[in-house]
Image (cartoon, rainbow, N blue to C red; front, side, top):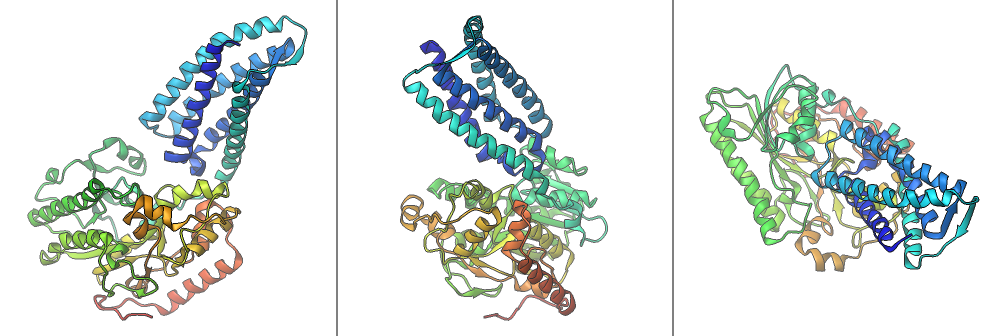
Length: 516
């Protein structure tokens, strides 16, 4: 083999590693998509074929029948790749960077075949033998590449089998509480929370208008029913009719560190859309009955072990300033006669996005653990429960003002990470020290990773809302596809039974008692 051929082989290794780590594991998270079972199977088989190819080229010179077998393996890998391309286009929308990477991988592999097959055909004329061969540093690179693709291949095959256990709730059930056909305007309807809400509304045959400038992001949602996509609220006529407006639009707060520019985007993106909604409500001839405006439990600030319900006060920090400004921007809707709910969400859990999606891969490989001392509180909620709570707030006219979107059983970070490791059947014993997080991420780490709030959903509880995932064990069991333990199931059943028997709607939920 020539140096130039080794160059293309090395390039294939590097591009393949980038595609796997950045796209398949990072941005796309294929291992946690139930729809990608066949794609994962193809990836697993192809990676194992690559392992054989790298070892054969790095340490041996195949002759005779061995050379013919390697040629067949190379052609088989080409067939699997073409099949994989068809399956990807059939089941998901590939990002531009992944399409470019796949194109480069294909072109590079074509060059490798053009140079390698004639050499192998020549070796096929010799008596069958698997002669040893050493190519210096490249032989060792081949070992590393082989180990990597074997691990990735076995993981993809295991993930493909796991897809059978990754169940999804019927979307229409999420909006079952809503009365007959509602007309709902959703901003942020293609985001992590908004997209699931839109799915539920459409599947339940409600009329949905989504505000987004990215039309391609609406296409997957349209599979659940007809919807209207607008790029500006100015497109809405004065005589338009909406029963509810759900405002979830805003720059993600936990995807990147809080640089000065990021902070400006976080605040301005929320205020801009909210101001536009108030202007829309003012000119509508028929006012919506309710505005569900996004917020977060960051409104309460960093409060240690203090139990916080909707009547708790806040402590100053960046998260509180963002949430307070967002809620104040929506407050004029109340004076316009619109019932206004400030949805203060906690950590929203689902395998398809949010913070948990970023944790699944390291925890699955046994590289997870608590952040800092692990005593900080994490007030969380399953994404489907949050969507159901939004619909509950639309339907229940007695709910107004702050509404905590959190599950009834907050946990510490240590309990959270231990429960995730247990659900994945992996150890969670590698803690992340606090000091490098503080040093590298500043306030981002302090407010989102190393501190927290102990928040209880008092208004939701008193209004009779039933959490389907009240405990972290039940939530993780559904998310990762593992059966919950009997203790968690018994506790959840007891909670549901008690709520159904004892909880009754309250005439007003503006003032709730503090629970300690």
